[in-house]
Amino acid sequence: MTQDELKRQAAIKAVEFVPDNEYIGIGTGSTVNHFIRALGESGKTVKGAVSTSRQSSELMAQYGIPEIHPNEVSSLPVYIDGADEINHLLQMIKGGGGAHLSEKIVANLAQKFICIADESKYVSRLGKFPLPVEVVPMARSMVSRELVKLGGRPELRIGVKTLNGNEIVDVHGLDFSQPMAMETRLNNILGVVENGLFAHRPADVLLLAAKDGVKMLTAQP
Ligand code: 5RP
Image (cartoon, rainbow, N blue to C red; front, side, top):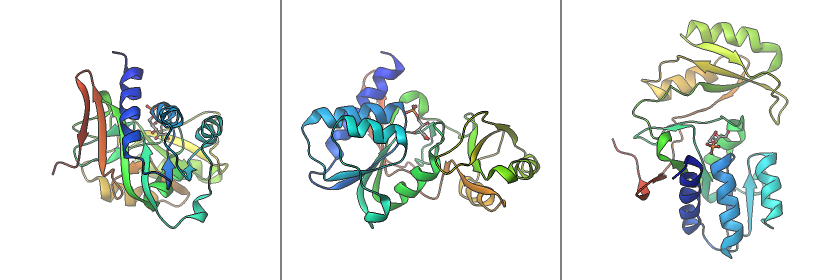
């Protein structure tokens, strides 16, 4: 089975967790694209969805899923999104698609964050995948120097602008042995808008697709 087929299996399973006639949150990425298609084809009715990227909004529109703005809701029963890496506490590195700022906002509106992923994303230690950090363009060099002081190797994602007109720096080699402390520390650097470490707001449920089926995991202390 290919990695993409595993992503699709996790996405199909997630449709079972979508409540009828409610607003939901929808993340970004190829696994989420499978989810949007599966939801659209399921016959299930949602009142609408908060989207985290243009790409997801466009696909939602193709499947007739109405979009609402995050400011129109105070809470969402579920948020469905993928991850670049996820550990046993369901803490994640996200932002491979550069949408981690809006993803973190919508995740924090959600009562339940359901992460959908293929088995390659489940890691014993976060950090092989470089951490995406959204930065204000005029502070890019200043932020990069601070990231080096923290032990990281920052690399500008060339030609990429976020929805908010910012840039993304992918940071290799950071130490994530204390993920919550690192998430806070990075966001305290002047010029950082948001980083892709989801330690303070981990997922609540992981639907992890492997060759022998989709497993439902919760945090394993
Ligand atoms: C986008 C994300 C995605 O969830 C993450 O990159 C996983 O993507 P994919 O489902 O394509 O493997 O965080 O910002």
